[in-house]
Each structure stands twice: as structure tokens, then as C-alpha cells.
Amino acid sequence: MKIRYATISKEGRRSNNEDFFVVMDQQERGRFWGIVCDGMGGHACGEVASETVAHAVSAYWEQHAEERDSEDKVVEACQEATRAIEQKAREVGLAEMGTTMVMASIEGDIVTIAHVGDSRCYLQRPGQGVVYQTQDHVRLSFGYEIVARSFFSGHPEEAIADVVQFPVCPGDRILLCSDGVHKSMESEDLEARMMEEKSLEEILHGFDLSCWKYGDDNYTAILMEVE
Image (tube, rainbow, N blue to C red; front, side):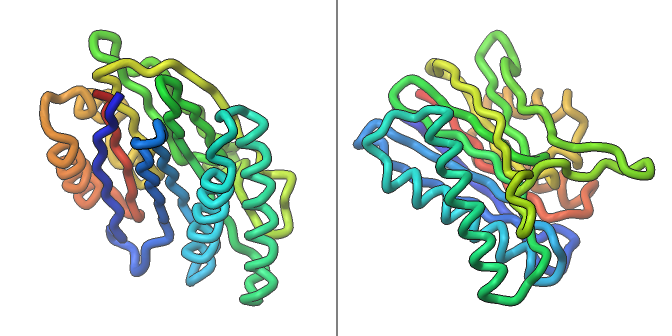
């Protein structure tokens, strides 16, 4: 199988971009990988946290590329990321910094999806629509939704990922995105746009316009298609 992909990451109406993403295209080895992290903490804290976790998880995945993807592998990668964010917080003197995470790793004809927080993954199949969507890790506090799980310095117990695996088929599309994307559009609209017979770049351009017009946050997305 061949994977095509497109990406977007912008500040939106914020002064800085606390989102971070990584794509590892190793299709010659039968692998493709993407991760999106949405930093929290304000100022430089969120930027540092999202980049630290994205790189830590990606580095673990690269170092263990010969191991088959599994829930245990995700757990170990998250543990590495937790250690990395704790160390980074000490190095830069930032007491409170955190990030969400969503990832998808395609190995052969199987995709492993994992997430922590409210960054999402959508798996869409031709003729069936969205066959899987991650469920946000959020809770209500004084009437507002707040992230209930994350990689957050000083709170390693919160970095618990939900992990699923699915077979992928030609025509499948997989979207990884920060909440700046899925909060800027109605779910039905987002899913309909994913199904449009357009290039991946054109679809993300439409996301870009909506996120800028209706959103107030950074927005990042990786859109993949299986051929």
C-alpha cells in the first residue's frame, strides 16, 4: 500500500503556535507515522511541551522500528515522553507545561491509533463514512470542558493513552488534528469535507479557511490517504 499525505499547522488568531507535528515517511520499509501534539501552559511552555513529546514519542518509534506496533509499544513510548517532559521542565525552569497527543502508525495494512487528551483521529472509509473517531479525554469544571488526560510536568499519572488497531483498505483517509480544527467546524461538516473528491491539499485548504474564520486557536492537521 502507498500512503499520500498533506499537512497544515498555523497560529490562527493566537500570537504563537503551541501545536507541533511530526511525519515519518518510511514506506520503503512498510511504515508510515504521524503525530500531532497541542501544547498547554501559556507563553513558551506549550510550545516546548508539544515539541518535546512529539520528538520523544517519534524517537522511540524510530528506535524500535523493528518491533511490531502494539499497545505495549505505545505505553513504553508514552513513558519515554513523560520522562522527557519532566526533564525538559527542570532544564528550562517551567513548573507547569503540558500537551495532548494523537498518533497513527501504519505498518503494512494495520493502523495503530493512540491519543491522550482532546486532539483527535478520524478514520474514514469509502462508502461507510467515519468508522472510528477518538473520544476526547475531557471533564467539566465550573461549566467548562478541560483536558482530563495529558503529558503534564509533575503529573505523570495523566499520560494514559487509549490505543486501538484497525486494518486499513485502499481509499481510507485518516485525519489527525488538534482541537483548533475540530472545534472550528461541526462534526458533520468536517466528516463531509474529508470525503470530498479533492486532493488532500485542497481539503486542508478548506480546513484552513474555516479555522481562520470561525476558530480562535492554533490549528494543525495531518491528512493521510491509503492507495
